Image (cartoon, rainbow, N blue to C red; front, side, top):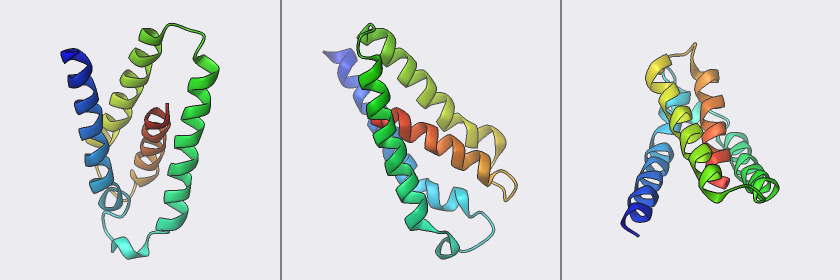
Length: 107
């Protein structure tokens, strides 16, 4: 139970960090109001629903293996902005990493 609580709290804390940081990460040199936030949010919600569908397709496999894969991919996706940086050139890579993270959240 303790391990489950730790995993859930770490994953949820990464989700809160994502919610706080995605707008400045995608508009490093411009004002966040210039972002098409509605379209970006719609893509995030689509990715979340896609993750739920992917999980349903994979539910025949071991739950432990699925969770290990989800947490690993989610961690790698959140590490991408740390390694490529938050620059104007990297905003598309960061956006793709954020979409992958949202797929993991949905799963």
